[in-house]
Amino acid sequence: MSSAPTIDYSEKIPNNVDLAGDRRLQRALESWQPKFLQWWRDLGPVAFQDHDVYLRTAISTDQEGWANFGFVKMPEYRWGIFLASQDPNRTIAFGDNMGEPVWQEIPGEHRADLRRLIVVQGDTEPASVEQQRRLCETAPSLWDLRNLFQVNVEEGRHLWAMVYLLHRYFGRDGRDEAEALLERNSGDLDNPRILGAFNEQTPDWLSFFFFTYFTDRDGKYQLASLRESAFDPLSRTCQFMLKEEAHHMFVGATGVGRVVQRTVELMKEHDTEDVRPYGGLDVATLQRYLNFHYSVSLDLFGAETSTNAANYYAAGLKGRFHEEDRNDDHQLKSDYRTIATLDDGGRVGEREVLSLTALNATLRDDYVEDCAKGVERWNRTLADVGCELRLPHIGFHRAVGEFVGAQVAPDGRVVSAEEWESNRSKWLPTDDDQKYVESLMQPVREPGKMAGWVAPPASGLHGKPVDYEYVKL
Ligand code: BYC
Ligand code: FE
Ligand code: FE
Image 1 (cartoon, helix red, strand yellow):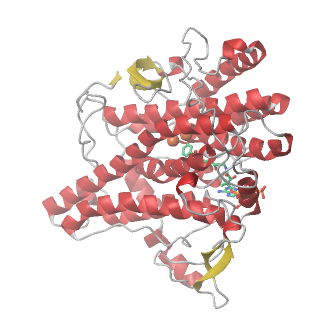
Image 2 (image 1 turned 120 degrees about the horizontal axis):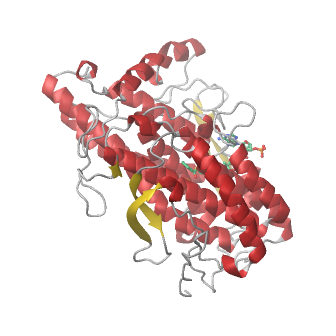
Image 3 (image 1 turned 90 degrees about the horizontal axis):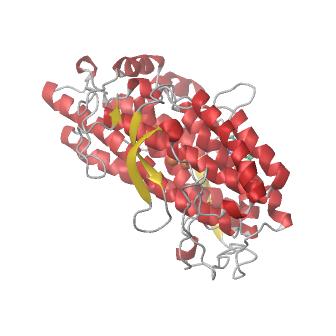
């Protein structure tokens, strides 16, 4: 490994890509910067923009001490461009060009596909900030408020990461795409975000916790497969983004865990499953929210069989999760695997397909396994009261892939349309659930205090206590 380039903080845009050495690129990014800041003001958090928030800022790509903690007003956050350091000996780990040196520039024939992958990735980052912009009004504690802002500013930095690649490697087209990333907006009827889940609302904190658990975790798996890319700058960018991503999933895993803990406390205290009269979230409601966020996140993996995915893999653009740890030929042209599908009798069955075409399913399988770990942890708490949460069957409530239009129950049974509809209110959040959850969303802004529907975190952040004033009001 060559040593990590140093970061110049005297520049307008902190970076370790020697922006100062490329005036044209620097000017182009500096002219995008005010548009980004305007977007942040317009569509970022609706409040607290001028408050000091205890935030982590990426400052280097070193293993030790890659981030700095301190109070910052969000619009003054130093969004920077950081790529993990270059390994001069890195070779392509899969596909038709396996074994050849990775690319520092984009081969012409792969321009369109790489542009598309980078734009889709980039589109999700600001989308999530837009989805979460009202949550600051109802945070259950200062600790949670701070974590929300941390996630938001880092998603902003992830947008910068993709915009850098667009500007640096795609010329005029890339600059146009960078503008468009600020013009599409989550839920906009005329100009929506690209992927379905990013046009859904994140109206309350229960949704936020499930979103960061399930949807940010899709981010982890997509970034990990882009980290395998033969296009080395994309690989190095994603590698660094994954460091930040870990905290987003921590927010989700501990957030849901704390809700579960509080639910169990209330169930024991009042000896009932119906904790709503006591201001808690009953397990059935948690299950419905889980069902929703999990199923829309599964859609983010695309169709189980995909020629796009096969082409990306063969070309070396997008690999599998931990590609190099796998013991096969990394070509997958004569490998088969099964995918779940509806059989002719209308039941859930299996179909054998070429592994190369089933890469979306393979990545999704790895994701599902990872999702199950958190559910297991939550269930250890729930075991105390004889309850559990379950991941629904992958065919449940799907809008992409093999199960589109199928009526699959959470337990995997294919049911009639009538049966599905009559159970909808048991399986997915209802208007009543949403109203109830909304009624719980009363802001708590005293250091160390928590809303009644969620337990406090086990510990504070970066050596600070839980009752630290993470946001100065
Ligand atoms: N919604 O061949 P298929 C994150 C389209 S999250 C709408 O199966 P492919 C984050 C598809 O575009 C990670 N449309 O698709 C998390 C295609 O359209 P065309 C984001 C969809 O290409 C939280 C058609 O259907 N990163 O970072 O194999 C907070 C056929 O589909 C959807 C990436 O996604 C959908 N859900 O797979 C903040 C990585 N699914 O070609 C951030 C980059 C599919 O017919 N993206 N379609 O016009 C990709 O690798 C792929 O584009 C996808 C789709 C995996 C998304
Ligand atoms: Fe992100
Ligand atoms: Fe994230």
